[in-house]
Amino acid sequence: MTPVVRREEVDPGPLRAQGPRVAVLVSLNFPGMTEHVAGLVRSFTRTALESLAEAGARHTLIDTSDHAALDDPARTAAGHDGLLLLGGGDADPALYGLTGPAPNSYGVDRRADDHSIAAIRAAVAAGRPVLGICRGSQLINLAYGGTLIPDLEDYHLHHGPPGAPLFLDEKVTVLPGTRLSGLVSGPRLTVRSGHHQAVAEVGEGLTVAARADDGVIEAVEHPAHWLVGVQWHPEDPAGSATHRREIFTALTTACARGPR
Image (cartoon, rainbow, N blue to C red; front, side, top):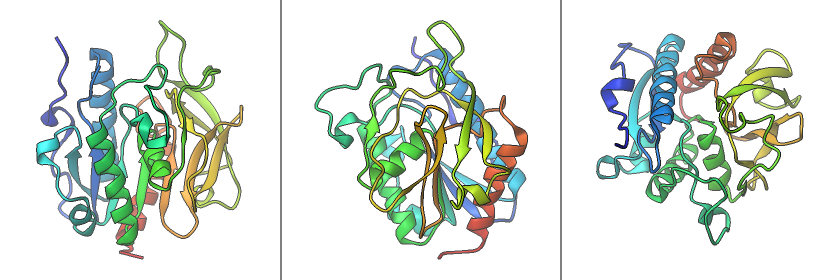
């Protein structure tokens, strides 16, 4: 039986009466989901929403796998103070020029991709801050015409081997002078990673903000907009609570400033 992640399992409801409101996009269910992955979706999504509340923000959870309930992305951007895109399945490889499926691909949902990319563009046009995590970071790059590495051949720094836990600790270097460098404490971070794809060609107007020790791009950002994508998972409960607070507080602070 295919597992199902229900909204009430991940959304703790309104935790705050005040504070900036963040639209949180995540596909709670996607093709090929296993019970293990469903457990990760439940844990990571709930941690993200609770972290927003701890940072002083309210949230609206938008399940991009519920196609019938999706609102107009421009209206979503205009009605919220910021946008957060969480991890999940792979983006449709046709979005970056592949004519067939990517190796080891899973969870492809083109309607969720298209909605999320439109929401990114609408939020930027409205001057709202945007943070993308893992899949969300890749969608930011695709929204600006970039491409992805379909499958990392040398994956040992980025996810566990077959039969081992998917997520592992990874060292990344944050580039000096980037927006990201002002959000986190120090240029060397130990982060939680579990990804088989990554940014290849950086989208037009974006810059690299962090790299792994093998050179793989681990974060992108836009120098003129509060638009940051990180390939790792600050919302992994097994990761650094300090780093998680830094990232979610930075997003909340940017949202509280209003459109720019």
